[in-house]
Image (cartoon, rainbow, N blue to C red; front, side, top):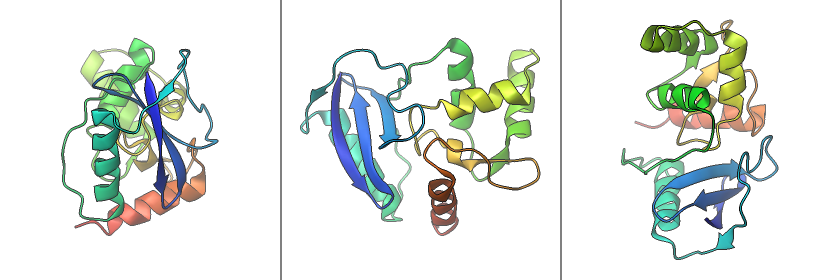
Length: 162
């Protein structure tokens, strides 16, 4: 696995990739930093996936956001990956209840808000898997591994993207 850093308006971010997939995108010192990454990382500023991720982030932060795909390979349990896959489809704000209902419908299973919130909190690919868009049922901002001030900034930023 390879890494490099990205200087975002919200602080330094760590990008972790394998040869052709994004494994992690973390705000420095966020909760669950490098979650489930057990191998040694090698610095590589020239890795094509790192460069592509930086270009995506530049586009996002410059508000000239163009919707293009990055191959994502977050490391987690199958349940976590199911929840993260649902998050990838979220456009605009939603609630933990919305994600729970969608999971129960998609998989014909019952899960709890708490289990969904726990899976969301461990999302290893910040911003691109948009866990920051999930708010409390009461409409208030709740938990974000990067910190609530970053969550608020990201939501405000996205409200201004045409």
